[in-house]
Length: 307
Image (cartoon, rainbow, N blue to C red; front, side, top):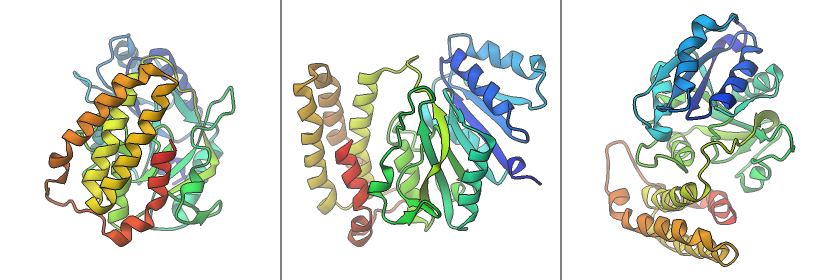
């Protein structure tokens, strides 16, 4: 069995028909990859395109399409975890694709360099500008190198290779997040179970960050709220409370330059603190990091405040 035959490419799509078409053309060019697309109740013709895809394509690679009747947000990716039968899952967005087959194999080699690696996040780069949205992640790593991968808390949904054995030990993406910080939520679950989450800057995934459907200020509200929810959910209050106050300051200061941020940020902060009791409530199979573990993850706190 070749490396590609051990991987299923999983793409989550929502109202980006043209971007998705380009992504599918790119993954079809990589021989051996299986492809599953979940559509989050698109209304722009994406669903109709996917319905025609398997029978209308001349490619040897059949596209399995799962069409949802409602937008479930990022939690729709949990369906991939229930569906995939291969050892590994390559998660992509509808506007991202591997630079080459060699980049996918590079991620696989990093994955296999250590049996405790659960996720390999690639360098996600805009194909036209060359700007990498993942640039500098290694500065916040708790260890590692180019050869072994950097230990981080990043699972970019637009370009990560995931080990199914590890994913099945988790509860998947938290549905309460809907959009934003859900990748950190999954990473924390893996870290608590003794797995490594790494970043490999030498593997490249092209990511156009398509403007279609990108509601910048709506996302700002979700990410602000969900950042607080992660703090309450995973960390002792001795660490979560002071970091949350620094995070408030970090979110409010940019409003001076862009007043349009005020509404989303303030609503996000309010919802974040309002959700404290729900996130602190014990749930089956969940635990918080100890103070020692929290200290080992200090790089993530710095990254949270840096962004």
